[in-house]
Image 1: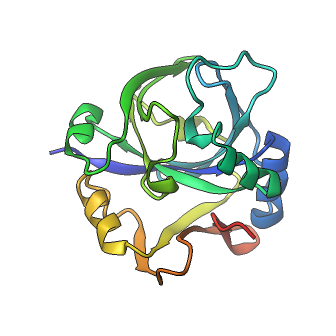
Image 2: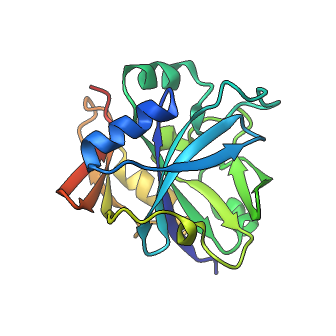
Image 3: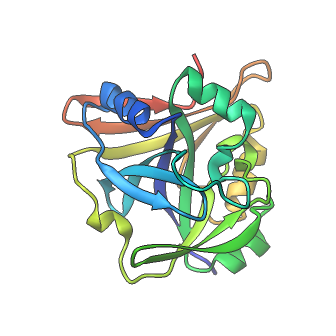
Length: 220
């Protein structure tokens, strides 16, 4: 039996600075630099949210050599890129598991091929679709398996923000619940039904030094 835990929340942006400005405007804190992902041609900013969870702001790093494969998080998808030009937004969420291979076998959604990744002394395995797409448009999580004896959030700056919860509003809520149950992640988020004529969206609620704040996937 695999165990699955909430790992991090992902905010996408056209540039890291735009992403940092966006998060600062909403949460009231300035997320510091993280690092670069050579295999994906991206870089990020990160902060811990406590309890083994963190917030990541990610963007294409145009100063890096473009990767051989499509970038993760849909960052080569014209529709995703167009939405991020309009504004940074909540892109998706991620879980970590004790056995990524078993998770991929159990999942009702194809999570892609398992790839090895590293940065500095961090090692992890990640399941990535060949085309870099967001699974179920980002409502199904990125799945990873850390291969270190600590969680990366332990090394991140603590700006006194804590995740209160994630809500996903989806017109196929029972289908999404079933897909999440297949990877033991059905209790990590709250799934709400919405009308067929209403676009699906996701919200992450945070307790911050300025009070309760919400990051959303909605494009306004």
